[in-house]
Image 1 (cartoon, helix red, strand yellow):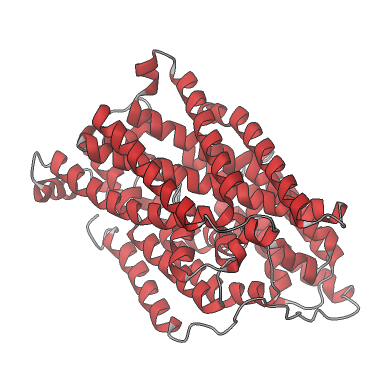
Image 2 (tube, rainbow, N blue to C red):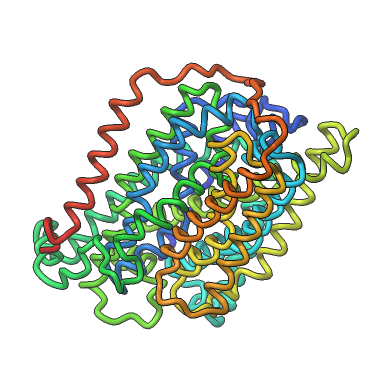
Length: 528
């Protein structure tokens, strides 16, 4: 990238920062509600774009395009099938959280089962963020930025040293943003960055197809459709890395957990000023997920034809951006990629602070005021950043692919927690002891299945089987040792709970578009 691209990169980042500072200049961050939830004041535009961009990190930009390049479009199943999960969350999960005035998703476990399980799950969440989420976000952003700016070549250092340097830069910038700006500043920047990401995705698609078609977009499309059509198929075969059947087992469970129980995702919806705004925001994020293949998957398809052989397949996305776009647009895309990294990083940091302070520290320091809690949150977030910066560069040594690493690591935490929470949603007599037993049973058996025994079953199918087994175990125990008093939900809502009246029509349209995307990228569509 030349000086023009670098200037565009810096100018766009400065613009986003200026907009965030201007819109939060009068907001005081001296209360936990203001610092963690932006005073529960988000409209649907902020909720939708914040959800969309928090999910759209460098991990997915790099990982999914790498997967398409090395395999096929079956990785699209993660994003497309999440539309159904998100609509279920909007219809059933979000009203429960808002009715009880939850700040964190484990708050539900505390009210439903008791404080011990709430603390255990909060610790699981924090461990997941430290081991999986925050380090992978830093690593993914470093890989993307090095591919765009060629830091290793410019500075004459090794690739590993360049990754480490960029991890430190992103970590420091993101930490300052979170600690100084709070949740509201994050969501405002997400609104701008989300719109820019959609524009950038369209520009990359147009210029990429022109580059492939030697000046003609139509010729580029014809090239993709004419050869190497196995990469166009989103219907994974039984022995592929992502078989299509997993959409209905473990993948569906992970998506439900991710969009309905993952703290750093749900925190965006919990900050909505009403249930209606939250449901509209989730629907807007669903629309973004339907458009996401434009920059998550199609660049990988273009790269299949442009680069027949790549030694480091994780560089597919940044290499294509650097080769096909004019310098000014390359700088713009680099800024969007950087913003996506910062958005997810900030969400992870903010949620880590929320979980630690509200579910652990506050229980220990029961007399602590808001000022002390906010100060402790900032110190904790800085500590988490330092730990993640030390660990994340070593992800490059993981064998099996970057995106595969992300999904495999998250599975150890996600579905076990989801199982306990869904039983809590659907039953009234399962006790805290039974729920804890189910959680430990799931985690232990899943770890054995992945680390000790070599099972001839895809890990997503294993998750589905263990989900059914764990639910059955918990219901069996509850039958003989139920709670003495059935659970009765409490209404402590802090926002308007009237649902979005026209949501079902929009939900049906979104589901139809989701199904159409799978048909398009299949042997019944363009992959025939």
